[in-house]
Length: 163
Image 1 (tube, rainbow, N blue to C red):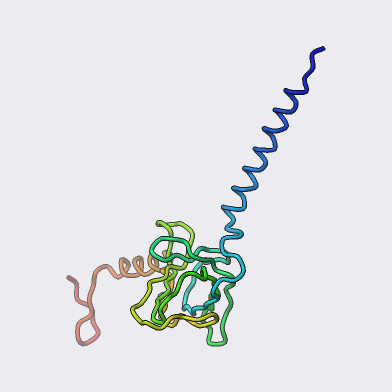
Image 2 (tube, helix red, strand yellow):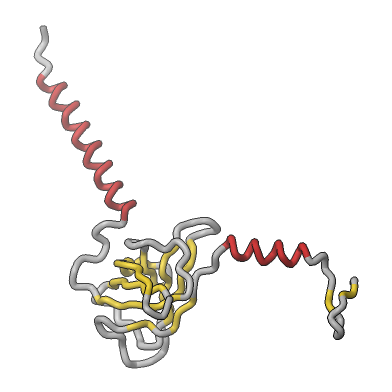
């Protein structure tokens, strides 16, 4: 029999590299470890967050600068989204936050648009200007209700007039 030590070593090394690649991809897709501790903690309140989830990205100009830490219901029945951004990013106090969708049916994330104020948000402060998520199902429902009306309009006395 031939000595197969070299071949066994190469196969083992190949398997280890493959497992390392799978672990790296799993962590990257899961969004774990993007912003470490020491980031700036901020929060924003939204009327509707749809299916935004913890660890969703926070982006500024299309660049990921943080991630959502938690989503809770506030006593005023609005969704409170706590997120963390990189400490090197200084956001003006009039920055706005929107819940947007990546593509037509993609994942939701927070998009930030910086304002023009010269004062910056500090750790633990709230982003006051927000825009809630557009929910595709609600938009389709409104469209279907309008289509079911058949294009009729009401006149001043409450009756309907056909177009």
